[in-house]
Amino acid sequence: MQMRADWLQRPSSDVTLSTHSTLQLPYGQAPPVNGRGPEEMPMPRFATRPLSLLLCLLTLAAATAGAQELRAALFEDADAARAAAQELQASLFSPRHWERGVKDYEAAEAGLERGRSVDYIRGKLADAEQEFREAAEAAELARITLATVIETRQDAREAEAPARSAPIWEDAEEQFGDAIRELESGDLQDAQERAGEAESLYRDAELSAIKSRYLSETRRLLEEADRARVERYAPITLARSKRLLQQAEKELNENRYDTDLPRSLARQANYEARHAIRLADVVRDVRDDELTVEELILSWERALTAVAGAADIVPDLVDGSEELTTELVAYVENLRSRNQSLEQDLADSISRVAEMEEELRILDERLGGATEERRELMERLQAQNRIREQFAQVEKMFERDEAQVFREGNDVTLRLVGLSFPSGSASLEAEHYPLMEKVEAAINVFPRSQLTVEGHTDSYGGDESNVRLSQARADAVMQYMINALRVPSYRLSATGYGETRPIASNETADGRARNRRIDIVISPELDDM
Image (cartoon, rainbow, N blue to C red; front, side, top):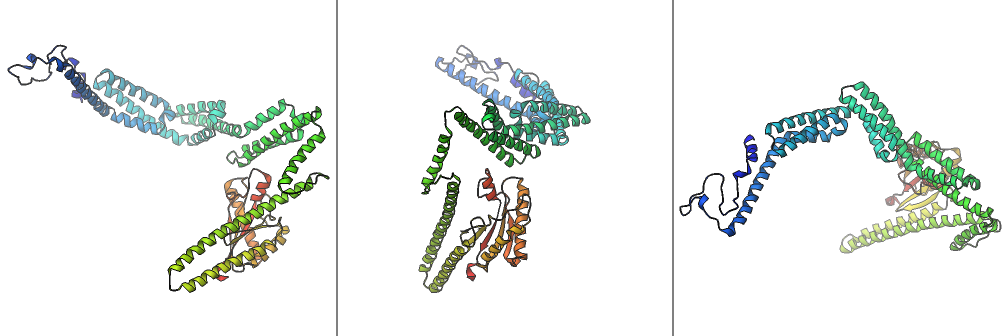
């Protein structure tokens, strides 16, 4: 290695290019040509510059390759130690050792560039390697000793605390840095105390960032409402927005990691704040005589009249809008139900046609046994027709507010919209027994069917708790069917899906109510029909 360094430091005069017409070679002599040595060989003028350039390039390439090999050999161990320390984030968890290691490493690089001796470079690299190794050990110790605060710090970072709650984050970082330095100095007790203070600050920063993320827009709107004196003109709506904001903040304080409910509350608060601002404008216009009360009412009636026209309903607003509103809601619900039935019938028809075409194609390719197979096919089609007839029979058993009945393939689903549980409860109430008697009658229409009780919740609450609650409710209905309705247990199963299968938006109260449901899936056995 010393010999290679000496070669790199050899003066450039060892290989020289004359500005005249004679080429000087550094090592050995070439055989005489025509009795002349190399010193006496005149070079043709046209060849002097190309040869000079070529020799320069070759010399530079050799020197570069040699320098790269030398650096790789000298820096190999230090590079490995540095990479290991970097992987453990030593710059964060052991800054003193890391900084000293980097300083020695950079000194070795500078020494190599300036042509310092190999001993000097090796010494600096040895010091750097030692510092990097100690940094890695200290970082490993810090990651174990300060594991809790490190995890808390990561949670705060993921909540965007550095940007959304910068002052608290910076205080936490200062305490965390002090804990690292104390640990690096060997003072475990002080390090743990500093880490505890940092952890508390990180949690505050995280919560502040989460609130900023979900509640800042609502607060901005409420400030705008205050500046516009909205409370004077729309106090009820504005108060509702403020209550929703308080509820959202309370939910975040109690469980910052289940953000479904506070996010929904914040959105409702935003809506009510904007609504209040709009209402205040309208009320202000009325008070300023820019809009009469009659004009205001007529503008609302025009909206209802337009919707009624689209539904082909003659609007009657003589006694107010309630009757027309009820009629429009019923019209929309009928459309939804009809659309669902049409979609199911279409899907069934497409599936049946495809199956029949495929089976008939196969049958037409055969000669033997075709008659028996066609007979079996016709029996299955008759069974499917029978299911449709039974479905129509069951559909007529329930009122709109009791159950929705629909088909998916050959399965019939009873969506028990009239069966609701108290919040957090899984007990079937006596008020639901009449509805369960209708369920029994519907089940008896399919005497050989398999029955699945499905429990569903809205998105409020934790995922795991919702699954447990939906399972408990499904189990309660299944046990009632076994004990009170005398349905054989081998025909029944119960599954809780929690919030994973919504049928409506969880952003509205009506949508959440539809998602909190019990479905009973009836699966007829075609072969036994």
